[in-house]
Length: 626
Image (cartoon, rainbow, N blue to C red; front, top):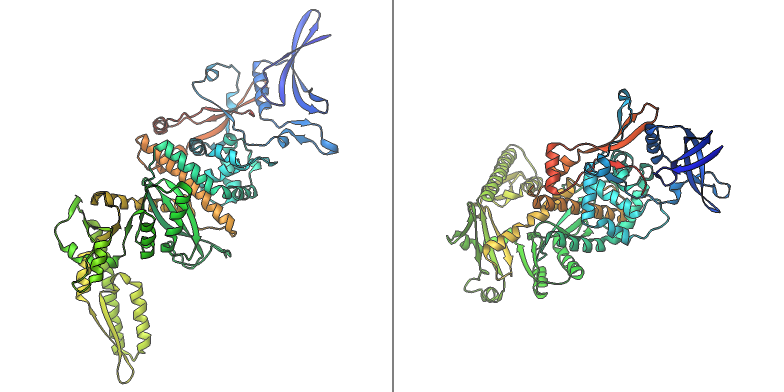
């Protein structure tokens, strides 16, 4: 009996099917065998795992599909230990290959007899969201940056891949690392997209990836700034700076966690403050984390010097709100030759009362007026103020909004009525009861503190009668009420930019809404709050991951705007997230099951979005190791 051999096309690294020919009585009969490759001390070897006998095309195709996804024991056990799988010697993190509808291989017919009653779909997973997130990551070259910066070790899953899982999860379904590993990752197609099996992803690996990612913060910011500038032709001539806070659940016993003014109305919790710098279109440039009790005005010098050290000192204009204003900060910016547009405290507006009364306003649109006014001069006897005004390089932009005026007037009237009702009730109570004057004063102070928007409109005096009973006398301050009505909707900007018009200055300042929008997205869509980590470095790494997810968000926003889809990526992300991957299982006549991992056909709306964004959705995932 004579055997001859003919190999079929190898479909797997370790296993394949091979055709053997047996010659009997002058006739050749073909038999098939499942062959396995393995490494030995003498080099690569092959062995027959099973004889498959005679097989038709359907049987061979089914075996090939089964072999491609099977785990393989290939190496002899080292030093008497148990069997070792091939994957133990090869790190995970290699992406599966895709097949597209217009591929030649996809259009080539392959005929198999299938039992239609047994056709089923398994392993339904979220594909569109992770696939889109990876596209954004590769657009920013974030994957290659992390692969280059994070050295390879003995880990089965590279720390760069684990970092990408953290960022994608924060963008698509922000939650804890435990939920990401145990609940979210298994229901997504990231195992196929990244080549990392779900059993290799756990919360400890994600925590350690955060530790590896944190030291790269500054390098990441520089890389993203350059990459975003190249992609979208960004100009960093106008930098918008603002501060927010995010609070902790738990003890948070470390240096940065302090109690302070909470923008989240959670004064009962410790917090950290985050200073964020963005471009005029809202693209993030960098951020710094401060202790939770840090006052906004004390962060300006640190942020400005950090950005200049990192990106150089060029002719930029800094835009900040009134919380950043102090004479020390103005002096710092001016002495460094820096230009700025800054909001001013409401109290400073009183100096420009005469300018508000004039009729020389410049109307930008219906309901919005602005004008440039000089530094206010002092009275005839105030020579020092007059000299300061004449020597100052600054000018002021007075702004008045009709909508803002209506809103402020309504708020003031609401609190005014509350104070008036409370004072009337307190006065009547004091006349009926013998109450302690000091206790009444404390009650009034507490009430006015809860209604600060209208407290300045009232004059309240508490006296005591001869028998020690409290009496309340109150009245409205007419001048203050008239000023509240006159100044409603007005605000004042302070700048040393000499060559811009009042309209250009106002438009630049109003871009601060981009920084405020960035904070809203961080807190709502990316769930930066509350922070559950109890180690300082993990908290800083958590904020970094949120920052990187926000960069992906803004990148998608810019791509949508370029494609004519608006600048709001939330709807696009929601639509494409509905695309799924699934295993279509086809049982054949020979008993072998053909398993194909397919991707759902996009809806008409999804097709339009993909076409506008220039994205090509694959139709199948080829399940073989790269």
